[in-house]
Image 1 (tube, one colour):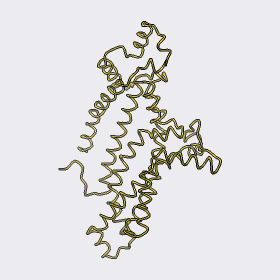
Image 2: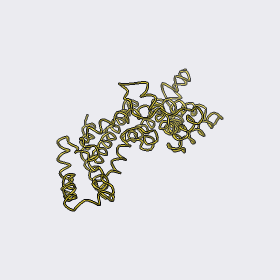
Image 3: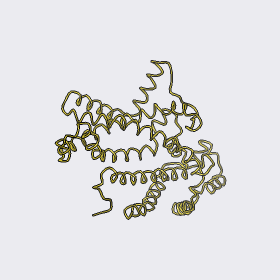
Image 4: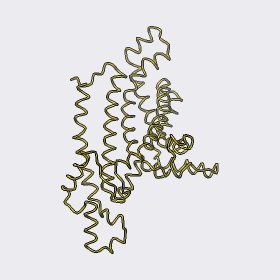
Length: 319
C-alpha cells in the first residue's frame, strides 16, 4: 500500500511536467489557431479583427499567463474548449478514446495469443529447424513497418478479392458489434503483427533462461510432466519481461496508432492529436497529450502490481 501511495503521489508532478513541455512545444510550431482556422483568409483580417480573435482564443496574453489560466481550469476538471470543434476538450477525448482502447486491446490479444506460444515453442525446440523458422518469422515481423503491412493488406483485399476493409463512419461496439469488429480487426492485425514478433523473441529468451533454473530441474526430477514443467512452473516466471514489454506497448497504443488510424480512416485518439496539431488547437493538444500521459502512468503502475501476482518473491517498495 505504501508503494502504491508513493506512485500515486508522483502522478501530479509528472503530469505538470508533461503539460509544461507540451504547452511550450505546441506554441513553438509556426503559425497560430487563427491562421490554421482561416487559412489564406487570415491575411484579410484587420488588426482589430485579429486582436479580437486572439482574445477570444486566449492567445493574446504571454505564455505564462496562458499556462496559468489553463492550469487553473485543469484543477477544476476543465481542459478548455477546442477551437476546432467548439466543444469541451474532455468531451471530445472521451468520444474518441473507446475506439483507441478497443483497438489497443484487440492488438494486445492478437500479439499475446500468437507471440507467447510461439516463443515457448521456439524455446522448447532450441537450435532446431523449427526454432530457426520462428526466429526468422519474428525478425521479419519486427522489421516490417506497420504502414507497409497495412497497405499490403488493403492491396491484397482490393486486388485479390475485390473487397476493401470496412471504413467510413465508425460503429461503436454496443451499437453494431459485427460492423465494429469488421472495422477494427484488420487494423488490430496490423498493429498486433509487429508486437507479436517482439513478444515471441522476448518470451523465447525468457523461457530459455528459466528452463535452466534449479527449480525447473527439481520439478523434472520429481516426475512432473514436460507440459506441466513448461506451462505451470516455467512460464509464469518467464512472463515477467513479457508483461513489461506489453505494458510499454499498450501505453503507446493507448496514445493512438496515428499511421494505422490514418490509413484505415479510424477516428481514434492518435488521429485526433495529429489533426489538433495541424489546426494549432492548443487546448485539444494539451488535453489529449495529458490524457495519454495519465493512461501511460496507470498502465505502468498496473504492470508493477502484476509482477507480484506472477512472482510472489517480488516485494514492491522494499529495499
